[in-house]
Length: 320
Ligand code: APR
Image 1 (tube, rainbow, N blue to C red):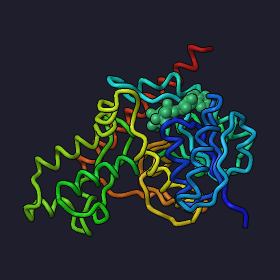
Image 2 (image 1 turned 45 degrees about the vertical axis):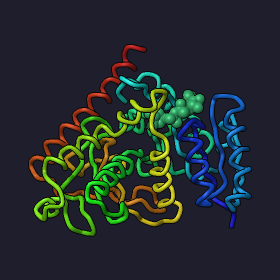
Image 3 (image 1 turned 90 degrees about the vertical axis):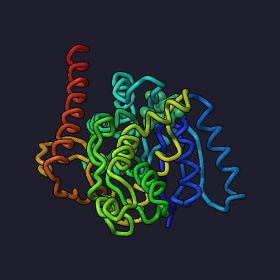
Image 4 (image 1 turned 180 degrees about the vertical axis):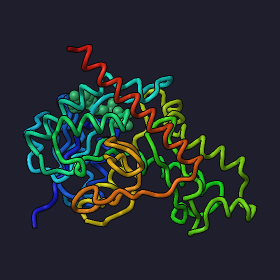
């Protein structure tokens, strides 16, 4: 059987890390695409030269031509600009909207059967723009944010409880921005919900509240430290987990920016919710029960995503 093909559109910090991880996990052959000339070719060669040392077999190539995306099973999109200190993800909307449209056209022309994972920010809005531009079915186009936000939440909780990250489960819903909704009630250590752990004296409500806020600010904390760009190792790991669930039909339950129509009272919007990812793409939206406080936070987050969707619409209107 031929190997799968993974196309990475954007060969910057996240794109390069994605390529290395896809190689290490032997997910398939890898094509790195970028508008910068030479850079994707150079990174591809560098990663290919790691393969004899790391013992993985994969053809790794770099390109500036969308035609090389032909036949890709998975496309992971990081093309665009990352934020700098003091910027919010939303500040990137103008430039990255244009980038998503050109990437969408490339996907439409060369790999319309792929499963597409968008990472470019502001995520929830960019994945919607990309979906429209590529014309693929909604279940084949998804955004990576929830896995990353939940990973940050899990890491902070594991540190607080002094337990293995493997035993911490956590959920973050809503948009990938300051309004994201870390769900404490659905977060647990080996099945024991966090509110019970507080009662058991493992932590305090105050500390958990601080962790929730640190999770919301997780991206900004890293931007502030790096100064020249945004996080890339954990975002790449998170997208690879989604790609693996699709390629191996694992049916993982993962929080992703998915197109929600009907569930959660939404009538057609990309936003972070738990989904099942398998061979058909987003196979199911998992609608969990939210209490009044959680619903209020989720609705607030949905409002922020909708407001940014309007910004894109107004940009189009003013562009004529
Ligand atoms: N088509 C293809 N690639 C493009 C385009 C385009 N129109 N415009 C820019 N790029 C490429 C750049 O040349 C660069 O190599 O996208 C790459 C982005 O890489 P980085 O600047 O290193 O950014 P990265 O950290 O990888 O983040 C990419 O993901 O998390 C989000 O906010 C982040 O939107 C940003 C994206």
